[in-house]
Image 1 (tube, rainbow, N blue to C red):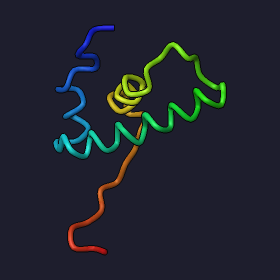
Image 2: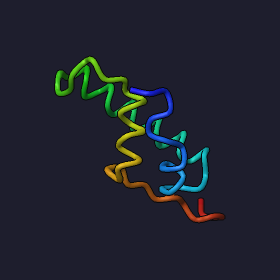
Image 3: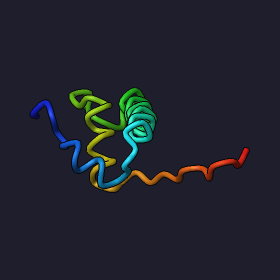
Length: 70
């Protein structure tokens, strides 16, 4: 797989905020890692790469909190 897969342009279509994408990608990578450790996924995949592919494909949904709400 190429180094820049999925392209950043595809990810920015999901969210314009790169910091939000980084947080969502990290959480999705943790989820993928947990599935690998449970034996549900192949060990050959890299969790961060799979998480980014999931985000670009629209398989991960996230909601941003409203500003000022605690």
